[in-house]
Image (cartoon, rainbow, N blue to C red; front, top):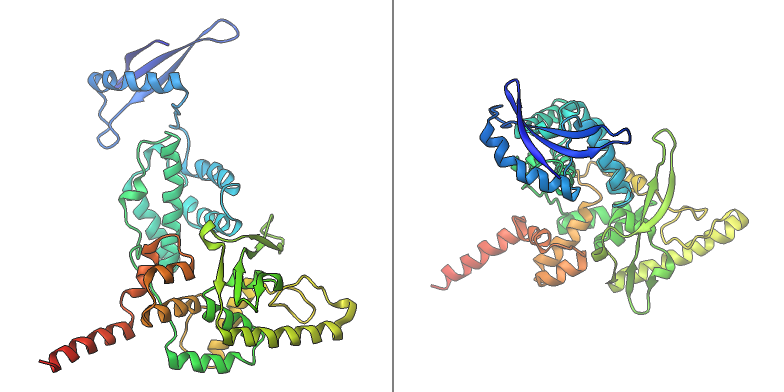
Length: 382
């Protein structure tokens, strides 16, 4: 494979000879050589680029994406990711792409994307009054997409890594205090999502994992819960409601056996008796799919319903606004504050990264007060 450099107008090009086509006509690939920032194009730059481009074209790794827009690329990337990640994760990627990335920077050529464009994306998000966490997720989506483009050698660098997302280093944990837990417990005891509430705060399971629990996953004698699946609503078409589907747990680390406290075992046994009574009443109208948390007719709860009902009950009783997921944070924070070793907390929460678990040790009010009291006692002893 041969190549040379040539100037056209004010721009220098690397020209690669690709052989002949079926008609016998010679084929060439022309690659413009310009500085991305200044637009400068020189003979020296073209001579320096020639060997590397020749090597990439020869190995088949060279991709000329000068006409590929961010919109075009995101469409292709989403198709690739559909088979690579869990459905809920893919849905978040698709949501961020359709609502924010494509409208904000979709017309920009992929190889012309620069850090200011990522800032423009952030600004677009904030103009539409989205939360800081949504901006962070949107940033994570474009960063992931561009990382793949770098891996495929479509672009030389990931510009999204050069820009910090707003709130990227923030991790807001809003656990319930012990007094709040007591208050929440008595209020939710009369609600149809009480078992969801209790299982989450007693084990740290996520909404989807709780909704996916079946009785065969629970051994009340050994006091263990096997976490294997999560329940998600899979939508092939945004205009169709979709179907609740059991999918493998979030990550390999998420699949585990979780010890459960004796009090939870007691409530589970009472709940199972109550569920058996519902089966008798419903008769043939009961759909027995073995779900622990089920409607009166046996159907599983939709995780999104659980979150919405949780918020609705909180608002109704004028309680402090927290998310259902904060019950998981409550579980983790209680363990840390009670002196449970961090590796054990990480194992209980099934975090793949220890740094995620370490965030539970940062800034909780009770932990700060305990630290202050320890210093106080040292000073008093002097």
